[in-house]
Length: 262
Image 1 (cartoon, rainbow, N blue to C red):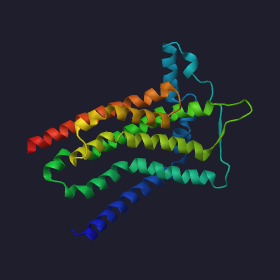
Image 2 (tube, helix red, strand yellow; image 1 turned 90 degrees about the horizontal axis):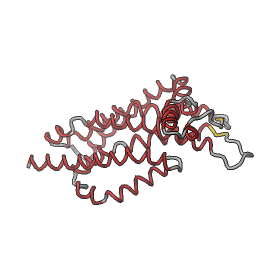
Image 3 (cartoon, helix red, strand yellow; image 1 turned 45 degrees about the vertical axis):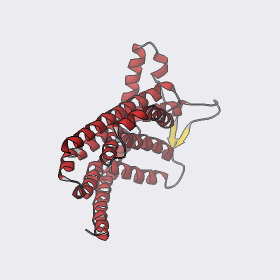
Image 4 (tube, rainbow, N blue to C red; image 1 turned 90 degrees about the vertical axis):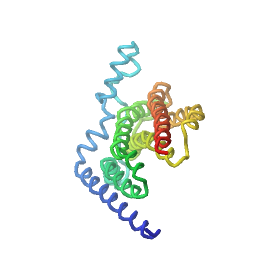
């Protein structure tokens, strides 16, 4: 195929992927009550799953005052005429992307598959399932861990009794959206390392050599996407470090398989 033919092929893959996001986003738009009242405003309620688990754990370890909530002292408001409608639109698009993610990955896979050798296609056979599983796992981690920890800390933080916490709707949704999507993409680390190893950019030795720098990077990421307390940062850091170690194992396995094929 010529370069222009490749561009034409890519265009149709992008069109189909975009249509899948629009269709899923339309479904999410219709399900406004469930998306907002149950999902988005779930972490605002003191009986949210994460808060109940943390409360039970804190009682077990004798630190009840730290995690058991009576209320979250803030309100959410919309201060612009189109604020609620705009939030509805962008939330639907975000939900559409998350729901359609497996199909988006499928279209990406269909585009790159013809360029791969038969043995490479067999090696990457479970790419769609594994990448989708990791993404959804990251989304759940962001929603049930990062988002409620951030909402609890930032919603309760107060510099003075004179200042009321009245957050704009877009700010609240932005926090949840960034927590969920950032976690979803971070959990794709093993997939990224797999392909970087295939093209020869990284090796297990490089990953092990720069493990200390990776640890610093993970801590910085944890500090950025979580509240500035040690417990929250540790909760986020542990799974990311586990993913990094899994990535080293995957990189080693890829190189061993390629050596056998040679």
